[in-house]
Image (cartoon, rainbow, N blue to C red; front, side):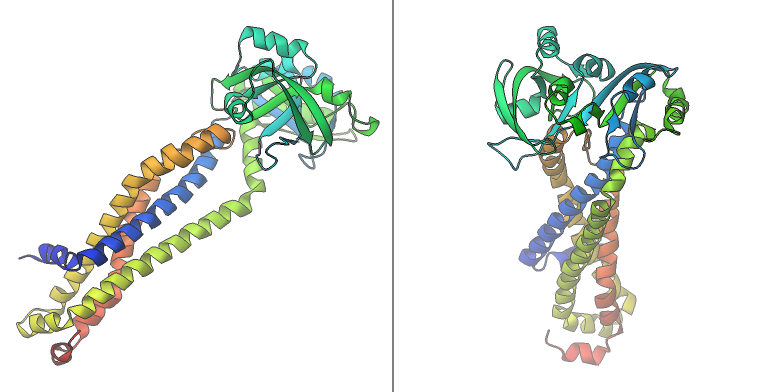
Length: 388
């Protein structure tokens, strides 16, 4: 019998304990893969941004409004085809106040031109443009709210307090993953006519489509130069850079997830190390017999490392196999439908899968080092005297 077969037989000696260890490692791998996929999918979201859109906001902060007349100024910049504007509204559904969805006031006609990925039937498009308190909602949000075209709905405003009445003009579904399916858009005029004088004629940010994506950076600089000497300067970025800047706002959360993934690796190491150490202690007398028969310390240590590798790779393989339906079809599908702007493509990256297998193998070796070193160095007489 060679050392490889011996390692596999050692792993099968206590089938119940080995199975529990493999299962524990599989759960840890699923958690590790899920966290790493969240991190990679969040970064990938920036790559799905439209290449021909730029966004202008207040230079100091995204939450500070811009004057509405800036829209007309931006429209005159050479290289810009169409301009729209949006205000974050912060609506809450009174029937489900804890549920979150994006709600924004905009200009319907220009919005549908700038965001040409919004697919909506022609009659619903016309109804939205003609109805002052009309709104369109993503198909996923429509299911959650239980609404259809023609329905009326009351929402509570947070940034703009009060109860607001809307008529659902249409339901959209984006043709590209650059816009989520969980948003609520309504007339900016409806909002502007209802706020106090201090908040009138203000917009949250301006979004423009440019003639050439390759000239986007130069056009953005040209826009900002127009307002450099104004009381309210702007910062204009590509849609991708805007998404990346938002990622910077949640960098603390991303770092915390990184730390959690490391903690999971430590837990995996402890689970596996405990199992291997218990098996080695139980076979101490056998190791003494092998040494007495002339086997070298290497012949004692290698099967222990092989046993740890067998168990760790089995746990890693099982965890990886289970990760695809649980992470992609479960968590991933929910995030794509409900947070499509931030997770337009939630799939396990091949590098993440490879990293999970590599980590399992490395942890198997690390978990076996101390038990293998101790068993190999134990004097033959001491090993033969031990019962277990």
